[in-house]
Length: 453
Image (cartoon, rainbow, N blue to C red; front, side):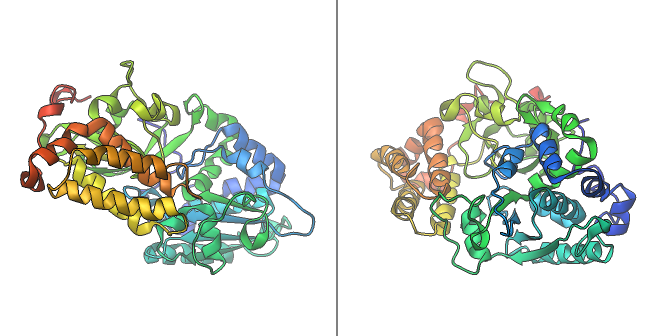
């Protein structure tokens, strides 16, 4: 049974309230940080933990904090990125819904470490229930003296606010989020300057994901060195995974980084295998923006080693035979799923959510959507696959923010690994619309249900 640091008490009745959260040790880490540690010592503990950003980029959190500029007399800000919009990802919403005080405690610790006196939780606009839950929890924390002036008599002041977003995927990018928080259209900024130098209202700002901030609570409670003992290599600690698709037990799971992918999919502790006795065809391991992998490559590397759930384990082999941890949105496709249809669906999303600021993304995502729709409807040409790869290469790396890369990678990888399925849609024309493309080309490498762990 893997160790749980964030979800240990998730099923305790009333854990969303301050009273029960306190009974389970809540706010002890905050009290430790404010009363016994200096801000620099808190940053050092996070550095020692090896915690990496849980929103997708995987950048070391403590290092990001240490980049924050500290000019005299200029306010600093911490912004929590709760604009969870990646298709296939719902772990942050789960955390905010069921244990909101964990996030609030993490916000206080991180704000103290950064010297922020005002902090914000920017929540996706559609998540109104979660916004109300957070507002109630903040009110409870403030009434208990954990927010406001002179917290716990330490002389530290902090005001924490929840800000609803505008319902745009692009606002998950930190500079677009800052623009939206300032009341502007959520367009990404050109960098440099980076937010650590000139962020919210032109002041030094750190933007962190919900899970990253929540993870600071066990790090400070147990110590950075203890946290670093969990996991594998440079992938330390635990990770929340949003598991969806054709699984027996979809849901949110907390894993110790380094768990074999096969165990995560097939063991009863986690997903319980592929639903309805089907066979696994492919997996999108980190949300819709990462490369898709066929079953044989998601379970094992190209060298035949068992692939593990970690930043390095999933990326082994690069984009030729590997993928990314991303936001942890783990989507499993069974043998009956149409890769062309799913790729078209992803591309529709990225075309719709492009802010239009960069020509390669604005025009390229629309072009890819049209070509994929043509293929899906049985009107494609053999040259369409090369056209899609060419367009994806012209988008990748040529935009202000990573949305262009996010749109390009799934298309390029789907064609790389499932080209014969795309060609089948061309040669079978109208029959392709009924999605009768079966398992024939993938039967050998796919694990059978009885071979499950």
